[in-house]
Length: 351
DNA sequence: AATCCAATCAACCGCCTTCCG
DNA sequence: ACGGAAGGCGGTTGATTGGAT
Image (cartoon, rainbow, N blue to C red):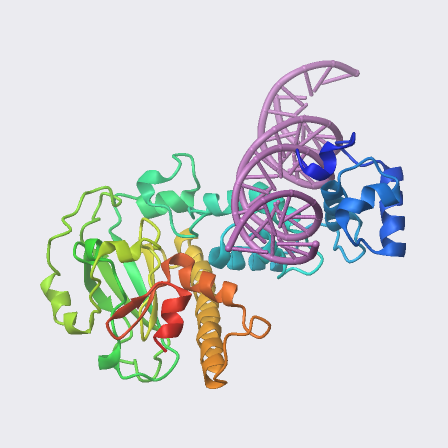
């Protein structure tokens, strides 16, 4: 289309399609199939570019299209997959039968984006937007997190999938310039009943750097761990350089561990008993995180399967592209032994 | 009833990738 | 291996629609 060779030789019509044009295209494709798109306009008697015909078919005429507004379930799928894949609309649309990439993209830009922003979430990274960067007129949920009278803290949720002894729990991977500055555990809410309920082992960390300033303060990247954390420093996997965290978003709100998976969520200490905006947000984030863990497990299983089969990766049984993007998502960086894995090649190499 | 404005959506544009000779 | 053609995709634009004033 636009300046494309297939359209440059002849006059092509632009703009909205008339019912007559639709009928011609529909009739031609249903009887002959589309074959080569560039030859369609001539064969179907249309003064359109081949690419325009293709687009019209894909986005409007093909019979398997699902019409009507998006359901809540579809919306959630879009959000979840977007969190992993980013603006890869065609990939996202594959998860929604009958929906087109254009439709998903439009829905994202017109609805979901605004909804996430109103929840204080960055639609690009899906992480909480730091208070000082949020729009001044954003929702009360954001004001809650920024309330100067509340102590900003992080809740560290360790997502355990098996009954791992407490002493084996490793702290999350944190970039040097983050963990060196700020965190100090306040409470370990379920340590005592860990063996009974290992899934909900929540540790609340005080963000000592962020107290009462909503994170606007500077920090010293050369400073050392607070004493209280240094006791578990042996378990902390060292990060050799911050460049290894280039894939992470600027704020490092969502971080992954190696043996365990963690999310770090901004929350407010002493929040009301009822479910407020922040808590709702945490629920939402948790849901997304669970999905990421699921996907991550799929990635690992997929790789292991392929390796066990002693064959090269087969794209028909394992979506390498998806796996790689999963590795890259939300700063998901895995490490095995002393090596950080930041690409699919690294990942495969280390198994 | 007229006007304005924001939301929505179809379609275009241009770049990148894949295919094929 | 190379280059041109075609297809695929994400970003953007502009027309339309519908609600508010």
